[in-house]
Amino acid sequence: MTTSIQNLIGLRTLSRTDIQFLLDQSEGFLNPEAPSPWFSQKIVVLLFFEPSTRTRVSFELAVRRLGAIPLVVDIEKSSAKKGETVLDTVRNIEAMGVDAFVIRHSESGLPEQLSTLIHTPILNAGDGVNEHPTQGLLDLFTLRSKLGELAGKKILILGDIKHSRVARSNIFGLNTLGAKVFISGPPALMPSSADGLDVTIVRSPDEVIGEVDAVNVLRIQRERQDSGECPPVDEYRRLYGMTEERVARLNPSAWILHPGPINRGVEIDDSVVDHGQSLILTQVRNGVAVRMACLNALLVSPK
Ligand code: CP
Image 1 (cartoon, protein in one colour):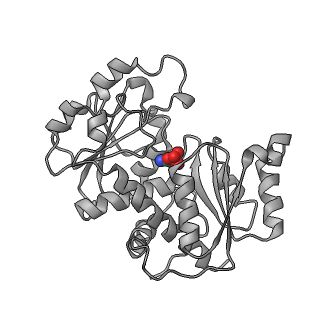
Image 2 (image 1 turned 135 degrees about the horizontal axis):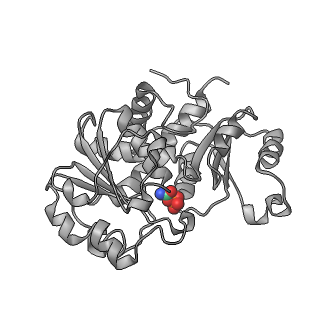
């Protein structure tokens, strides 16, 4: 089985077949010793206009493990600081001869727009509040590895949904695979109904905490919020935090996820991070294999 994916922009537009393909391919990349395609002449450019630890490092590792060459552009020392547009930056690097771009930027929709203006494949590493498709895929992969097929499974996404590209990619992917998605968080941090997301909003996570198969806990994204949208820390933790008390009410076979970075003691208790039902570092580990599968799909597809 193959795929004809040319760019990885978001999970909203990926078919069930394409998602299943990428998840199945990720299995093969889990073992670092497993034989990998050897893209020794391929150059993958990493352009991170926003901070990142997990996504940037795991993409760089994924490129190296595929045998390709990562070219990490230091945005702080680039001509972006002299006012060059992102499009001009990308077109100039493309003119030198590269094989793929991994781009993170604060502007929603920018990777999609760029993909219509250049000929080199683009992998979206997170655009504004829109999507974070490789995070969505690694979350689906991690859930599937523990729960089996996701059709009919109940997943609660908890926290700042409105500003979360992780939530959106998770919701699109979970919807496509047939899972039932609940969301909960402060009313001001819920998405507008115009977003057309197929979710059930619950006022409090306690309404469903005992019946879900997994809870994906989100970081409070203060950098994207207006003042007053988020309750004070103590109130947030009491109403929406993944506290020890809430974990005790989870089904013992349910799992806890968090995309990171974590605000310990705010959206998740310190002790919950390393709880036996937490998959947080498993997500991070799986992220390398999932990104290898995505890069592999794009680097081998006919242009
Ligand atoms: N989950 C995630 O995107 O983390 P980083 O911002 O560290 O890449």
